[in-house]
Image 1 (cartoon, rainbow over the protein chains, first blue to last red):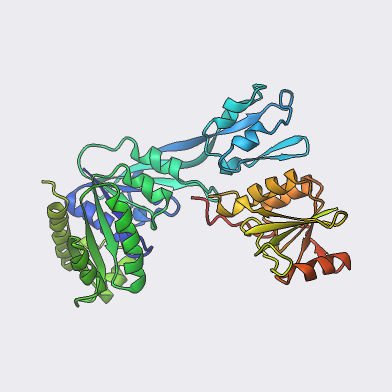
Image 2: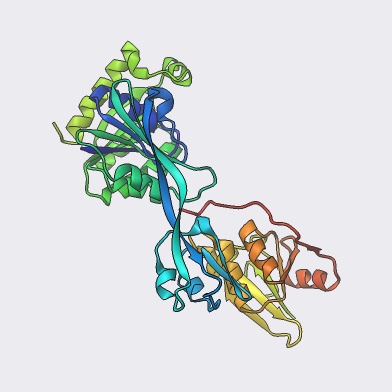
Length: 276
Length: 121
C-alpha cells in the first residue's frame, strides 16, 4: 500500500504528517520532495546505502557532424541550438529521449551519462527511511523521483511528496494507491488544495484530507469537504506547543498529546483509504 | 540590416517587452526595405529553455541586432556566438526604441541577466 502525502500549497505540514504517521503506522517513510527533502531532519536515520542517479545526454562527434540542424529541430526541450556551423548543447535541459540520435543521418550522436542526484536509504526510529536528493542547480527532479519510487518495498509506504501539482507530484502519484492531502484553513490553503484535489481525481485512487493548524471551527476547508463530498481524515489542532516542538526538530509523536492526535489520524487514514 | 525587438504587440504603437524568452512577439524591422515582419515567439509557451527557443527562431531569421530588456545566460551565449548585437532598452514604445537605437542611445548587452528556471517542470 503506497500512500502519497501531498498538499498543493507548500508549508502546510506534509512532512509533519508523513513522518509522524509513518511512526504511528510503523510504515516506511519515503521523502520524494527531492529539491528540498527535510524528513530526515526529524527521523535522523542512519544511512546505510547511497546510490547515484544518472541521466543520459547526447555527445556530438564534431568529425561526423555537418551541423545540418536536424537534431535541433527534433528536440522538444530546447536542449540543442544551432549557431552558424556549430551545434550547441544545453546539457541540463536534455530529457534523454533519444530523438536527436534517431534523426542524425551521420551517426554523429552518442549518449553518455552524468550524475544529477542520489538516493539514500537508512533506518531511523525503527522504520525504513529513504529519500532522493537532487543536486543543486539541476532543473529536472523527475528522474530522481522515479528512481526512488520504482522499487518500493512491501507493506505501507508513506510517500512525502513535493508541494504543488507539477510534474514532480504527477510522477510521485503514479506509484500511489491512496492519497492524503494536507492543508490549512487559509485562503491559500484552500486555493491550492482545490488544484491538488483536481489532480488526485485523475488517478481514481481513494483520498482524504488532513487539516493542519485547525482552528476548531467550521472553517473554509471543512465547508469545502462537505460541499464536494470529500472525506476528512482528521485534524491537527493549531497550538503553540506543536510549533515549538517542530521548530526544535523534535518528533511530535514522542509527545503524549500529539501521539493521540496522530494515532487518531492513522485510524482515520485506514478508514478513508480503505485498507486493513 | 534586420533589427528584432521583443514586443507586447504587432505594431509600432505597442511597447517593448523587457522579457526576451517569454515575450509574446518579435517585430523584425528591416532598415533597408523598411518592411516589418512579426513573429510569434515560440519560446513563450515552451516548458523550459524559452530563451534558447527564442534565440533559435531569431538566428534562423538572420537578425543583425536585438533590442530587448535582458538576455538570460543561455540566450546570451547563443546570441553572442551568432555574432548578433544585443541592446538593452526599457519598456517604451517600439518606434521610440528604434529611434533611440538609431541615435546610438542604447547600451549594448555585454553580459547576461539572471537565469529563470521557473517553468522547467
